[in-house]
Image (cartoon, rainbow, N blue to C red):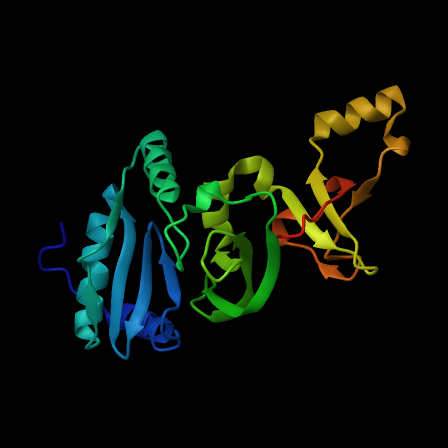
Length: 237
């Protein structure tokens, strides 16, 4: 518990530097807690682990000292047990729906996902300084909406939850000629096996860097060896 705990000036200034530079609806990750700025002087606690109860109380005290409010009414408590936490997050992801209709995201074509940089976001480095970074968004298509195909945007972490590891490590992109391709990461043991039996050169395997075929490669795919296969895009009737 944090009875009688009071922040010092350094803690107040460090927190002020973070929250006053956040944009509305921007998230802030601190330890095992996730916050979102919801107004001119308000934050919402989105998630925290069970063991982060004390740190969350200290953040609330700091915010009060700074004249800010903290909404904890809809916080999701993540179990400390990793297996239970993963199960909880997976169950939540399975209930997510398209923002335009009631189609569940897990029922969409999860393999056909497009990764794009949409603006910038920020993180706070070890010295407390705010640093810019690309904001990656994964886009799926919902074909059940009355208006036709509708884009559904997910964060990379949320896409991993609904799509699973295989789809997460498959990158669908268009090359410089407009052809569609899928790049799938090859496990190290598969690469070794192909080298040993002499079949690697017969495969369309590429080493991905920061860019490839005019596209910016998603961060989790960089530095990997991938098998490239043509992707077929079916036209909607």
